[in-house]
Length: 229
Image: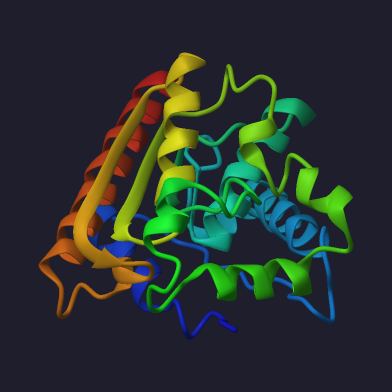
């Protein structure tokens, strides 16, 4: 339902807040391209950026991944794939109301079953279009809470929204990262819905979330520079 233009405000906000280069990547979408097409594209984009960072006036030793909603799932999955595949590890992962489970019976799903703009019926529709069958729902790249070992992953900033069925699973993933010894900054924003992050022009909560992401990324990039030079 969304494309690069839909989410344009978010990467621009991160550019401003973190004073960094942002590569905003499109990917194949369902139902024409089912799982794992989007994850394959996210991984291809990440490895391309690692190899071509200098041409973007970036530093390949200081790369982070970030995403909202399904994009948050992709960013988190890329971090795991980088760790397990021996690829350059991101310095940081920014996960904004990420999908980390296919379980639609969590407390936040119950509380926000009829919420707008995202609710249980919409998530069921998304999963039905994206997944080829029950085995995909159990795949760790969809259900990141099933990853048996999260040790060694990059520090994370995890943001959730109160009026969002994905709130519980986002917090659960933040908690699981912490339990694995991964440094985590977690913040839930009250009174706002799924998709609020890019609305900094009208929502003070969005401006605060963008500032938080900027602070955490600047910290990560500064530490990375210290470690590499």
